[in-house]
Length: 260
Image (cartoon, rainbow, N blue to C red; front, top):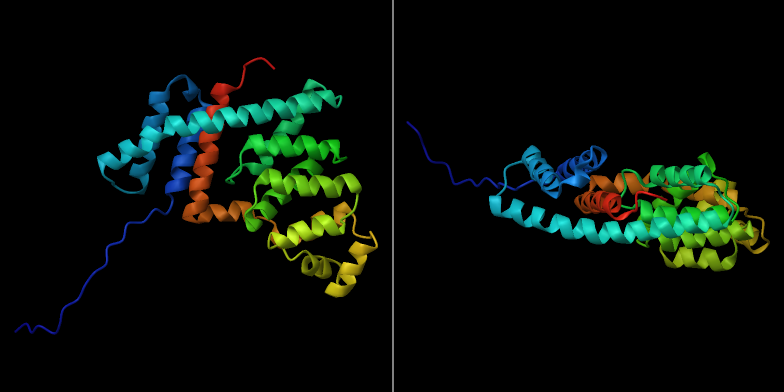
């Protein structure tokens, strides 16, 4: 004979795990296969991405997809302008079309899979090259570190890029840049102390004496924060940031002129 022992409750909680990457992948796939010719197609792809995560209300899909065009347009136009400005700056510095394209490729590689867009990376890349950073692996590595530090600090890619540009232009880390980083929550002295295997006081003296080169500074940041920008995509907020970046990539392909 059955006997009632008590009352239990089951909590049913919707999960958004994988949603951001599903949407981002759909947008990027659409962009790379010429979806820019059909806004309707990209919206259907985004709607399909939701189905890979779980069933949601039709009204919710309509609300989300209805906002796609606006997000892509605004992000895309802003991004396209930043890219064109970066290209113009690089050409003014004497880089030919092939060199500029290579720098843009380095910029794209540095932000792929993160919440940052090519427009921001392109602007920072132009500034870093002007400050003496060589294009190729060195530039891509530095741009990646800029993104990681920006992610942890909560500052924009361009803001953090400016700090790195200042250090690169001087060839060494000085008190002004160190203070900006510390005010952003980055324990620079501790990272430098770990990198050089000295105390924080000794690391501070090295900065004061101008003995911390840009290369050593960048390496110390990368050793402690490397991968932070991509790892942030595992959170819901980070995933949505990746989606916004993907939408900007879509809008940029529409907004950027075909001829350079």
